[in-house]
Image 1 (tube, rainbow, N blue to C red):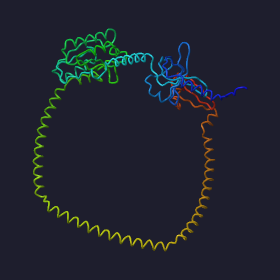
Image 2 (cartoon, one colour):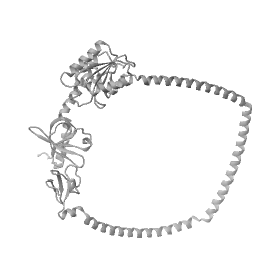
Image 3 (tube, rainbow, N blue to C red):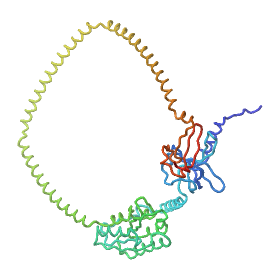
Image 4 (cartoon, rainbow, N blue to C red):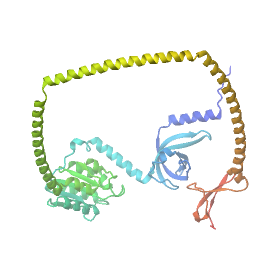
Length: 445
């Protein structure tokens, strides 16, 4: 006997294949070059990723694309993370992207994350290894470039806040070949001499490549081994390096690092003076308050006699009892009068007569409602007929049917209303009644 055949529709087949791709292929990282890039009006991105031997269609939806730091464009080599899927209406295999980044920066970022995980597992970031910064350092060391803006900012802050504290500068290269060795030697030299109570490791901002000397494992090990507390002020507030995680304290900028290690002597002196004056005022105020409280207590003790207060409370209780009795009597009288009035009204207004009147009014209202509904329906049909005619007269499709087209900017999809907004070589999209095409501006009149 022939086995029963299961016959699927094309939609069912594509759905099953899509489910297999979604469930059977985990999220993946791929590397390739962008081509055929299109940014839809909806905010979704559509393009292909290709290498020397193959290509794949990709889609990145607006909820993910709006957080991109990379500006996708044709020819850009990128790293992409996503899942394989199937566009069921066409049966086309595609790659749904969740993240996109420049391939060059992505490689360094991966290297950064790998080293970060490795050192964290080794315990270099553990809080118990962090040393507190001295509140009043006797000498401050600075490991940085002697010619950069960072050293000028640091010295300006230290001169303003604690000009009497000496500063030792250990000049080093902060990027490029040989920089990591100089940084390591400077940290060890400062630590071995024990001339400084705290070290500032600093440089100005830059790209991840510029800051890479502070992402080297050997530099991290030198910071971890240093017995002198180190504050790291590398780059701008948004920049993070491996040195930031290993150092005892991280500062968002070099100037902020100088602020954290330096006591503000003028401010401290002014603060101590304010505290002394405040202490004097508080003591005087507390003495006056204690004297006032003592006088008030003596006066209250003389004024508050228990027998006199008990008599006053008893008299108040009698007064409240009489008011309660009077209010109760008045309330009962009002209720009796109201009951008599309601009884009289009930006799005057027979329920049966009111029911007949309400029934007659209901019939009249039903007839009026039916007539009103018919009138409104007739009016609505008339307005619908007139508005349909007006809609047909002003329809943009009717205008397109007479040979006109709608011109839009191919990138922004904004309608072009004046030739003055165009530029030579600009790509525009022309929408016709049936279909459309793209064109390049060759002449502007």
